[in-house]
Length: 181
Image (cartoon, rainbow, N blue to C red):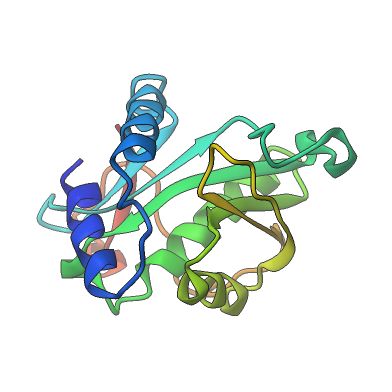
């Protein structure tokens, strides 16, 4: 939750309204807590054990994705947050690659996201990572809805995979590690 709070402040300083609405924020946090409780959220720990980032996966969001999208063909990535102390290390790219590898092992074709409709900078970021904009949905009760997907074979940093589990102390150069939380 500390990463989320930090991200809210940082987003506000960047001039975006993402995560600034208290009502939708409370709903989102409630859903995020459920994903944590259900074991669908991971953290990335640095060598010192400090939490640097988090990512969650979830079920298909039927406000956005339809049967015509073949929802079973994708892993749905949610709540990718990289702490400011890890900014500039390309950790977000490595996390997206990790989710692509996870999706591939499950026999899925895509990693899919929905992001805040008004955050053009975030849209550009994901497009640089190989995501293609599918469409934008705008249900009245949601502020996200910019939908994009990336084939699981596309990797941004194939030479720098994240390890799963606890770090092996003999190989500290491998750095951050996603761990279930």
